Length: 73
Image (cartoon, rainbow, N blue to C red; front, side, top):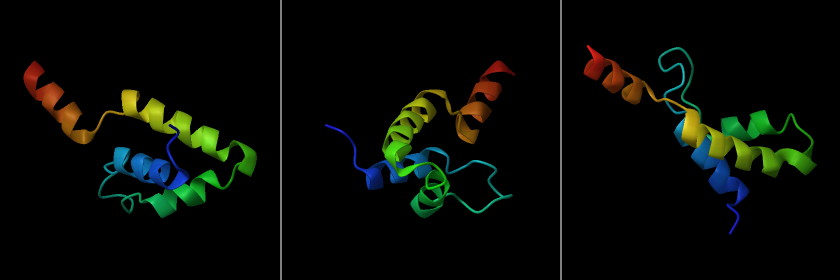
């Protein structure tokens, strides 16, 4: 079953919540929606699906990076 647009917006916002934390406002679903609207409406849902998937397997949160470095030191 395909995720709804709203759920994808929420998922992406949650995945990137710590991106440039302290420098930029915390991303929210409305922010992600404004960003995706720069693309043609016919491709927006596909882009959201692919972005949610890709970020889900490649985005390193601040906590995961800090934990990784602390184990290496």
